[in-house]
Length: 250
Image 1 (cartoon, rainbow, N blue to C red):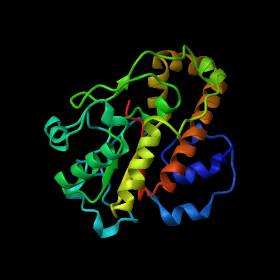
Image 2 (spheres, one colour):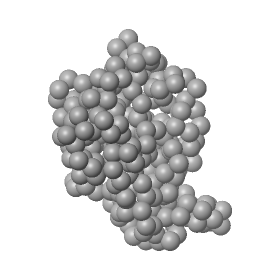
Image 3 (tube, one colour):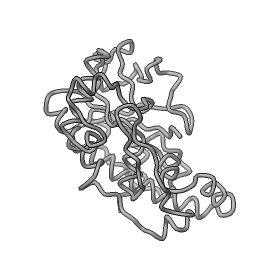
């Protein structure tokens, strides 16, 4: 198991109540990656960010990040149909195709004159990798949660599922990131938080009820999600991402 104290370095926006254990922090991480920050839980915007949602204060990008030309990310619902047609992409297949994802990210970056190429284009990748059923939609309406797979936090924990980074869209995102980084682009990968993930796996109202009834159960569920998100973030780093952003945009 990856030490959770380390996760506070790599994902500083995950509230500290998600993690209950302390451990040493890998000092090699901070030198190779910097992370955008959000001022509140459940918000996908930071007051220090410009209207496009990208911080102009990221120290790893310095003057190369022009906040007036920043690219939007997870807030986008679907994609530009004209752009999709120009690229010759077919949906929903494009959501799981590394080459298509890279082409979309690169094209959107150019269109918005951004310093960053953003991945992915929805908030459901992590949940799908944890077993959620996702309706992939089309170029106009992006991926959305489908039928719930768990009825409670206890069910989620009992399933004991590990995040799958070897197949599906999570693997496609990692390959697209590596492809873009290999082309010399600065890639920002957006990671969804625990509430957004639970919202895809189960009825969030039930999750909140379970939380109110048993705080220890909720803490265990959040800790497990934190472990899985950290594994994904480490894989993102290994794929060449220049920046990891974190939000719980439910």
